[in-house]
Image (cartoon, rainbow over all chains, first blue to last red):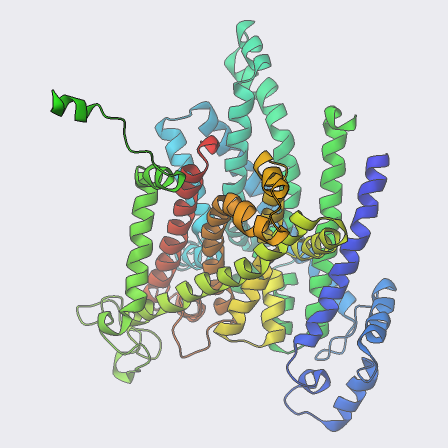
Length: 312
Length: 291
């Protein structure tokens, strides 16, 4: 319990610095932020409105205070382009990205953990070699390129799956899965490679431990030794790592959504960048960072809860 | 007899760096990767002599032509030679990889050394800022920075460099914390060396190896990040060639001109794979315990 409280206490300064950093992004805008935010027309009325709205005539720390007060009340600002609260835009787009990230995670877990177990069990054989090549491929392939290649194969050449677009699962679940399978595979590919490497090294460590030797000495079936004794322990660090990778999935989703024209969280930030909708950019980054910090905390707590040795 | 005596003379003592280099040279994967990196570096340096055409020259008579003897990699949507653009594109990718990691090293390592060596409130402050930066996913942070700085290759390099800095702060700090309790540092302090001299002369050389490994892997990540930002339109601006922006255009013509998407992607893949393999090889060579 004291660990959880200590860990909770530690995230407060981190969150504070995250907020300062994201607020500070605005200072990077060349020249007058009000003019930059007003778009190409630079309408003096809009500039004056923005100056008042963001308290741009006040000192920096006062402006941070105003901004933070809004953020704590759930007000992430308003989109200059679409005139809607940033928080509601995020909440609207988030489910799409969460579905994409969730499917990608499932694909990555299935491929990554299976490949990791197989390559550890068959260490130094051709199977291990192929699995390692797969991991290197996954880590080195830009996912937007993989996306284009898969569109070329499955949409253009074979015509099995749609090239882009999104159908809500509430409209048509079948079509939804059809439109999400390629993007989810593309997004999960790199994560599968990371998980494979971690599972492999964790399994190798566990397979050489005394209790696995004891299990084998008892004459247990090799499958039982691997799945029941070795894998359960090897998976503890892997599961923790998986939670930490969710942040990376959000990063990857930005590109994947762009390639497959999926109207999610990633597309929101990219469109905002091009529309110079800086409040949206700040809001999305703040939301992502906070989500990442909270996930990190949950992963740490879960790690302590499932690993009794850490509780001491 | 004399000849025999010479043969059994003890081998010359090798320095740790020479031993590491020997181990690296014995790793075939790392050596092939190094050859590929050198190939791309030469391609970037000698691009004007290697590229068969001007990478910016358009030709309305040769729009979206499939690979042929005249255009080995085909042409793009406004008739530019894809091979020439791939060759020149190596410049943006390598420059982004090297410059952004240079920025991360120049900022991150001194901050990490200071935090680890001095400790106290400076360490606390630097560590909390590092945590805050690490809390933002790398690409999201780079996109946000590039968005506020404005889209250009230079700003993309700065954004990637800043986004990659916290990893080096953390690594350098952890290394310093491990090294500073060693006896030889205590000895250096006991004979009256200044803090700065100890940090530069005794601590720094002992933390270099993992930083070199991380830097090599970070170049791979930076190359992908530059390609990603250019793909999103936040890096190299058209018409200047970059592998990422070439793929961005190619995705619109994947049905009619799939060749446009192949070579820029293959190039990114090969360069990133090579830096990853080289990083792995360096890790094994510099830290024998790792293997």
